[in-house]
Structure formats: C-alpha cells, structure tokens
Length: 415
Image (cartoon, helix red, strand yellow):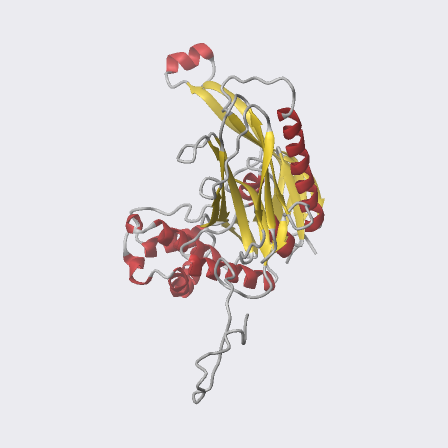
C-alpha cells in the first residue's frame, strides 16, 4: 500500500530581510532589493506516513515542525525535494485562512469549502452540518467582521473537518472556543482516527504523542534527529533536553562570571522530581511532586523569596506557593544554593501542566529578580473518567427515611 504522506530530501528556507530598498535608483546602484540572510527551516528531511497511522512531530520551538505541516498542506513550497500526498488533505494549522472579513459566514463557508476541493453540490449538502457543528445558528448570515475570535475559529474548524479528508494535519493543541467545543473537536479527531484516517500531529505535549501516535519523529534545527516508535523518540528527545540543562548548569557553576547586566540572583537548573527522586515527566493523581530550584548569586543579596505557580496547559492557574506567604525567607548572602518545594500530594486530575519559578528581593515586591515563566512541564495520568482540575477529598453518607441517626456515622462510605 502506498504511503499517505511522503517527504523526500525536503529543504526549505526563509529569506529574512534586515533592510529593504524601495527606491529604483538605490536598487540599480546596489543591484539588489535589500540586505538579507537565508535561514533554513528544513535541511534534507525525509519520512513517510502510512495510511491510518498517527504520526507525531516533536522538537523545540523553531525546529521546523510547523513549516513541515505547511509544506505538506501546500501552503508553502520547498526549495528542493519532493512531497507527495494521497487523498484529500485538510489542515488544522491556520483555521480560517482565506476567509474574507466583509463576507457573511455563509459566503465564507462556500468560498473556503470550494478552495478545499468541494463542489457546489457537496457544499450545499453539507452546509447545515457545518453550521450546526460550529454552533453559529443565526450568526451564519452576519459579516465575519462581527464574529468573536472563538466564532471565527469554530467556523474554520468546522469547514476543515467537513470536507471528508483522508489526511488531517494538526498543529499544536486545539484552542477553539470554550471547553465543551474543544472536547467536541477532540472527539471528532478520535473518531477520524478510529475510522482509519491519517493524522500528522505537531505537539509539545509529549505524553499525548506517546498515547495517540503510532510513530513519531524528532526535528531540531531543520534536521530529522530521530524517527521510530513514539516512546523511543520522546525518550531520546527528553535525554537531549536533560543533557542541555546539565551543560547550562555546569556553565553557570564556572568560577569566572561576567556580571554585567546580570540580576542579583539568577535561576539555575530547575528539576521536577517524583517520589523516587527521578524526573517527574509523568506522575499519577495524588502522587508527591518536588520542585528543586538551584540559584546563583551574582552580587550580595541579604534576602530572597520564592514563588512557584502551576498552570494547566490551556493557561488556567491551578495552584501557587509563595515562601513569603509561608514565612520562609532565604538569606543567600553571596553564596549560591538551592531551595526545594515539596507537594506531599498533588491532587491534579489527568492533563498536562507547566511550572513557573520566580525569585523576589522582598516579601512585598511585585517585580521578580529573575523568573522562568511556564518553563517546566509534567503530565498527570488519572485513574478514571473524572472531570475538573483537582480531586477533592470527599465522602458519601446514606440513611433511610425512617432512621433517627441523621448521619451519625460520618465515616461511612468515604471516597
């Protein structure tokens, strides 16, 4: 069976202009249109995705992952190499690309769906399904410029998924509308996967890549670093990140320092640790979590306070800890050190989370001396289909109507 997607030795560059010449005389004198440099987003990338597979692309920001999806979707063209796709392709990359602000939602559906390959008859047959899925109702005949950003994105997603694609390109976690609509989008993708659809997925959610992908590839600096089973590729990528952090920590510990422009205190290596003291990339609901923060003193500091925030991947703040509020004060003086925050039990439900760390020079300071916002991630796996953010301690009680006890045994039925 032929592959659904194939890339053969693909190269892609972006020309970044530092200065543009618009005057004809200047162009003729300099014999060029400006000063630029070429930045290569992809350098000889090759892989193929089999029909019915879910292929994950991982790597740091700027690695070339999104460029790869845009090349597959024909939004961009490569400098060299060959890209082949078999079957109708839909891209959840730039939802609503090609929409016209002064057209109504109805007109934009007709325009966008035709650009994606549907005939006029197919558009008419699927139009109501598109509107119903997007939950736009009577707003479908209003100009697009009157839509909220959520309505705009919902319409773009709905059109993309109703063109009956055989290959779906998905860039990052969907942020379409409210939580209920996001769940509807994820349910559709799961159904598409179950029907044998092919998905190429770009994500920083490494645990999701482990769980939903049948194969993965790690791209960095425009090159394919590794490809294979998701666990193998994700583990190799995480090992690389840890090695880079270790080198950075060693550099910070060097005896010579350039103090020019450095804050009084700099955050060094930050480690998230599980109950065994290993990296807490994946923990279970209720497990302990430790945040170990190394710091470096660049000039004498008599007092310092630490703040730690926990955000869910969608940006929701779910927990915070402040040493100032807890009456805990560091006195670093002029010596480097480390501070550790322990959560004996983390009742977070399944999902991906990010940790922020900041140091302050006083208990009332609002501007940090140094901060690392949402830099450190971990994933929680739950034991059941619970909803919400945290698992709260709770208990159940029961009594029959004729019973005089009035719940006199509160220990019964604890959960």
